[in-house]
Image (cartoon, rainbow, N blue to C red; front, side, top):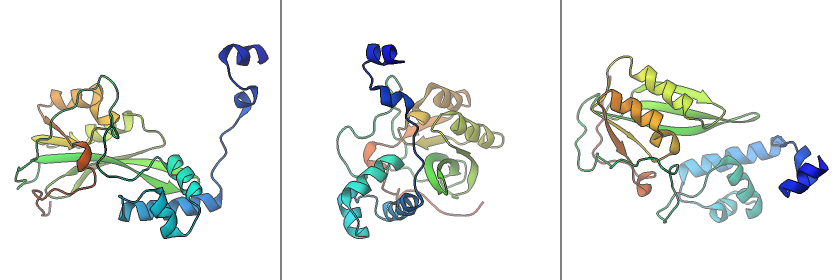
Length: 204
């Protein structure tokens, strides 16, 4: 092991390191951070620390662990995987007036007693009806594809809108949409924390 670490330029102690689970205190704080982030996504670690009355370095550490950051316009903050095609945003000035005209999908996370689970949902933009969802403990594209496959067992939309995350820009995901003759639409980087004025409402 000593020779391998020397050849790789690694500290020997790092080869025996096990990632520690979050403490109960940290999990409680992460839930508070998550709640505030959902209410005020433009808040960074400084404002969150002030709002919660805690040390900023702790907030920064926990936000990195949770994979969240303030959402506001800035360059080079939302890159998809290299080589993935980014499709244009097709919903600008589009009146969404009926079910199955536009579907959308997004990923969020759910705080658990011992960490987090990732949730992906496919939703009809007009009715807000959830067509399919899946949980995963990783951000692999497979659980997004499973939700997509389930949603396509019935009707299918004219347009499918997502963000530019690597799961949605992957060849596997976009290829499945193209096979079904669905137009692909992707949000720009500044659209993740805004709402569309063109979306309608209704039941399904």
